Length: 182
Ligand code: HQG
Image (tube, rainbow, N blue to C red; front, side, top):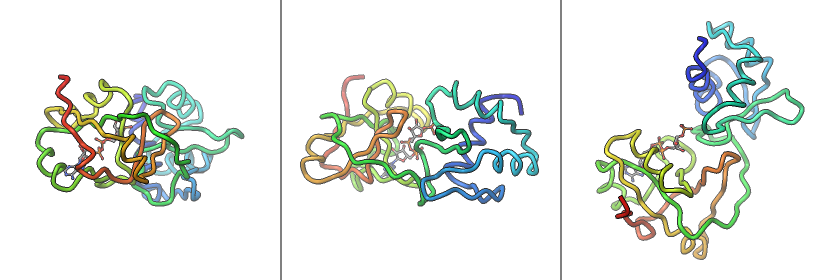
């Protein structure tokens, strides 16, 4: 498994969703011990090395992972479905945030609002283009604008992961609009 994309996917799966699938334990902030991760991955047939991990963490297109200051632990910075993860600080969001989705979800989204589905949070971005790319992963992309200023003023909390992705628990439909900017 030399391909860095494959290693990034493997790390995403283990660190966001299923550490127990190789017998790894994460602490309550989502950190896993790198040396343990490497030996467990190798036992499970994934030839992971420290060099590969460092290479993926440094060059990852979305900066999905972080290594602790002492160099001993690694975690995913966002995207978790695991309950026990990163303790984000609530901060003031920009006035508007974007969410990219697929046209086939729109009716349901305007019915129920944005919900995290399998993940812990709804993921939002500050720029339009990122939202288009996220939407394209699911089908024909459509971009929603989120009135984050209003949500914030009405008590909703927002968090920002180390890689810039914005997170919130849910977005009721009344704060959403289809962005006609296409
Ligand atoms: C949709 C990637 C029906 C939602 C990306 C989305 C992102 C609803 C899908 C990160 C709904 C969930 C997250 C409702 C939400 N009815 N559909 N009420 N509410 N949805 O993959 O935001 O490459 O879990 O619109 O770049 O697409 O993994 O979330 O289409 O940052 O690092 O349910 O994942 O990053 O899909 O993507 P996802 P997402 P990574």
